[in-house]
Length: 158
Image (cartoon, rainbow, N blue to C red; front, top):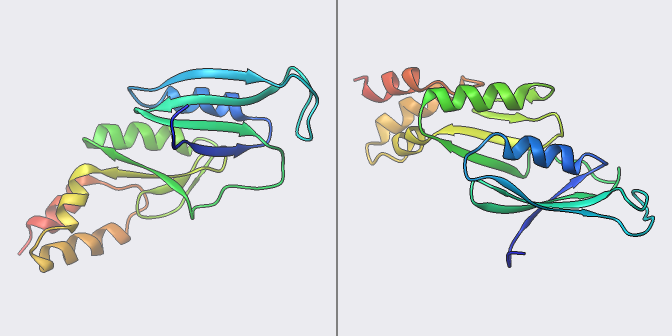
């Protein structure tokens, strides 16, 4: 296990969620599924206790810890997308059974928050030209799913 691993709390859906997440991004895989050897507060012996998985090269653990805690958007996974096709593909997959928020944020069917962000957006809003960054930011905050072309038009305007 990596020195630092993000642990995602689940109530019986750890393996299902991990398999879904690794299906979304290249460089992802299930590394280990560990079954409980005894009954524990959140399950029975033989149930999946935790799943170690790699998501786009980053280590994660999905833990079946029970119903005690729910994820919230205070912690999210941000995905830097190369193009609109990648934004659209990930958005469609993650919003199925989930909930759209705003500015490229959504929660998936397991309650985990995601930011699906075109890489070029980060470049535009960090532009040293404050007016360009302002125009792009104004357009961004009006969106739910981020669309590159309107962002680019705002960047290039003026």
